[in-house]
Image (cartoon, rainbow, N blue to C red; front, side, top):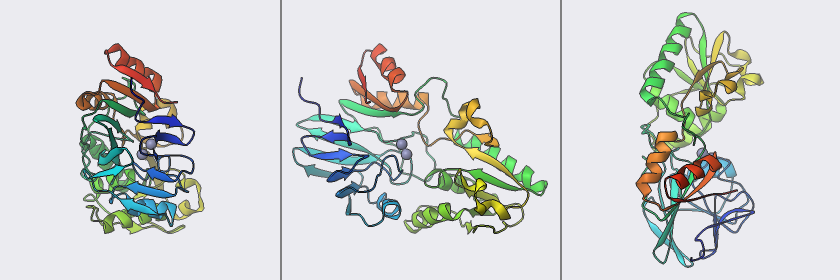
Length: 317
Ligand SMILES: [Zn+2]
Ligand SMILES: [Zn+2]
């Protein structure tokens, strides 16, 4: 068998024929980045390559970096391979990375979801021989309700709180989930943002992503009557939350599917930016891959599942 196109190293996934890393976690000269979440985009790389849509948030989070954009679907020759980026449907600008060496195609999924959210570029299956797939929610117990249903439940919770004179605080990751919530709930009433959420939102709005008007809520400031406030998960415990007045808290995350994680998180809404079990299965099938490598999550169970389906399957440490 030929040498693998990508191998796992101390720094992260490495392509020997192209001499670059994908989503490295330690300093390397050349990094291809799937998206701007901190577990995928670390500081200190010599050079960054990502989609043009991902660059503004990357620069916001990493400061002055040497970064270049490669449009979705465009190809770039690097050493002995050809690379391209394809929508992953996870957060705005997120990509799967396709690497082709002499006709052999590997695809690194990054984080992905198949469901459309009206905000990020829709997931696109990329035919390949080897698919390196995340499997954060790679167990049959994870099955998401439709986004419409979850948004409807959130809107009802928000209305009920407002009727009782309470503000509603939804805790969500500041990049991706927060904007998905405001895009889905913006028609229902005034939405305020924690400053950290507001910064990312302003960047994405400036890029032309369709986001409703929101109001920045500074530390200690009181929200307007009946407002919905979107804040990062740790915010209520900080000084920022002192002006909130009477309020109720909810958390929006795929992890809310696990009852044990609900403790102290208030009302739980299961809304994930990752594929659920049926979504992961659909995605792997859609690539036509004969070789699946599981990463990020329930890798052992996910690899065993595909081995049982007759595919060659492995996992990344
Ligand atoms: Zn992510
Ligand atoms: Zn991730």
